[in-house]
Length: 147
Image (cartoon, rainbow, N blue to C red; front, side, top):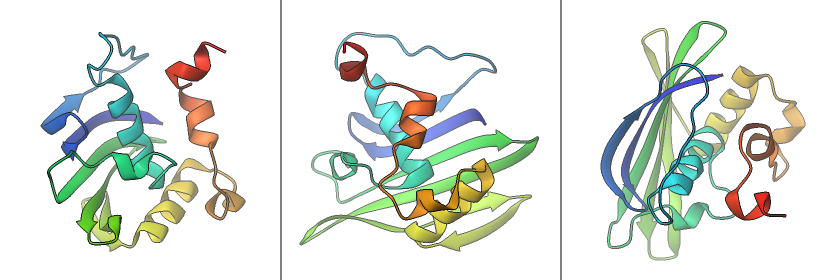
């Protein structure tokens, strides 16, 4: 998988930001609190939905947010968008979409996860488990690197 860009709307410290990634290895560096972990959590959210910290993604004081991720797998371009909405009982995922071959398909959060697992070739049992496969095959959280 080659990540090409990410667009963050009301995600943690990012109000409205598009980040383009170069081909090759990408290193995120910066001071503590500069938004490195926010980018990684947003990528994880775009691909798989909520993780254990997913409810903390929505920028404080906002009722809606979204992450749009553009990536390539096997020379095929994809765009996935996942959305968050603050409701009376907490922050929830709402429907999003995948674009492939200029065809936009709206999906529920579970359908999006199923589609991504298929696109990435992950085992189907990843759908039903609280899987950390992305986290440990793609990046290691900073706190856990210390260990």
